[in-house]
Image 1 (cartoon, rainbow, N blue to C red):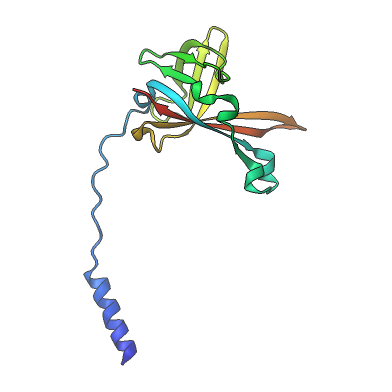
Image 2 (image 1 turned 45 degrees about the horizontal axis):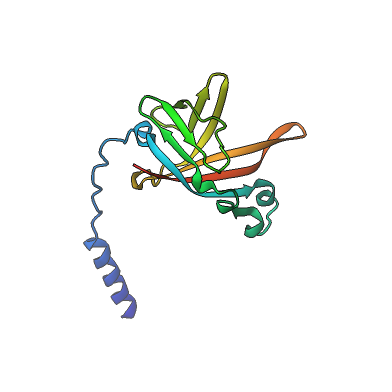
Length: 165
């Protein structure tokens, strides 16, 4: 009798459930347009990729280095006309340039921001667009080292930036 009651309740639940309708997604946001504006660094995390590969404890894999190098002074302005300006203050200038032109590797699905000034060029990976609607952008710089027959990532820097305007 108990099994019959469980089956009846289970069938009633299945029959009464209807799938939720998903709302329309709307137009895809213009990622390049979302990148434009003044961005200020709020946090920089350094990850030791060798420590990650070797399974070291988390505290040996990743460090917050924001205050060690005063990274919160760093501001990057990406203008609509594809010019950029960097005010590093007392922080290291990770782009290596103070002004020039910027672009993305793909206008519809960008994964890198490319900074150029004359013969200089710096590519910085876009870590995530997940919070860009809230004015948060994550950029990644990966340092490589020649390890025998191939380049391997040894250090990854993740920059979290907050939109200023």
